[in-house]
Length: 452
Length: 64
Image (spheres, rainbow over the protein chains, first blue to last red):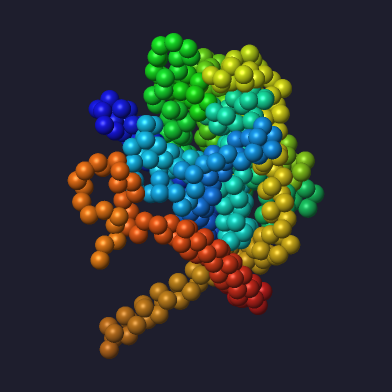
């Protein structure tokens, strides 16, 4: 920090990530609105609190151990090496706080904002699960699941497949620039694992197994919520880049933005592709759902997710068509799984995030076949088999299986699902009756004061 | 009394390092934080179970 140009780059980078964090916060405003809008009136407050409280719980646990996992586990451990030393990410490190150090890379200043950018991704992973399980899960059980997906499993997959030295990048040529699988695939798979154990809401399926639609209570909250999620998702794209990096291999210097693997891209490229894949998703969603507003908005999100793995490199029209196909795939999969396996995914999160994310990772293997996965020429190149294995690891190995096992354990302890009588009456009903009684008592007292 | 590890901003700023109070107690802070986090889950689960039992009894006995 003792020359102006170095200081400018470091402080710009610090500000850049800080700004993305603020924009990404809108994802969680959107998730809260969206979930409340999708829930029935008798469950609004519990639904809101269930989502809100994952924020502090994932935050403190991501401080305690999540951040360290990202830097410690790129080798597996046990696949390409052992546990990496990551003293800057240990919760007792002096750099995990206000610090005036001035290392050459400025990490003392960037550590906190980079931690926060990843933390906002962690909240997102947990929020994705939150929507699918509304109206019948116990809040305490969900918060344990939220910590597991938000501060443990997604960040393990990030260390493996979203780290410039991750073993999946090295050996499989795994490429997932904007987290089709790394966040959306794993969270969708985790949600599916929980849903298998949790079961459907009472009344969701007729006695002959035919699914019934439980429509969103407030379409306006759902709409605004999803618009806010789009906005925050844009910030997420920016947060996945490194703003200024020397990408010139060999002699000379060439500064550019890079993706998380330190491969070159530009903010213009990802802006083109973000908007074209959003548009492809919306167009396909409107068409396939015959104009259903809930699915059209969700499909905008699914379109972006389907193209995200390669949106650092795709042509915008490629991104649009990938989004279109991905949305049709996830929509058909949602209703197939609902009919065939009686999965009650209340907001379609498994489809929008899980199936579209899985699709996105696999498609990138074909579209970017032979592209370098890393500036390190010893790494495998991007290929369909590596991407397919990667998608299975994200959705299944680190998503579905842990979600299923943890939900099973919670179920054994009897703390996974609320009692049927409470589910039928509504989670807010009992407390609301007490509020009504309090209000009546005040009104009675006021009436007595007037007459007295 | 001095809670910081420095007394002024003079000299080489880069040598100051951490600027939060009570430098050296980080282990203790982490330990206290983890205990608080785990205790929060335990007490929350206990309260929620009791609340759900109460609501279940209320609804099953014909309460609104």
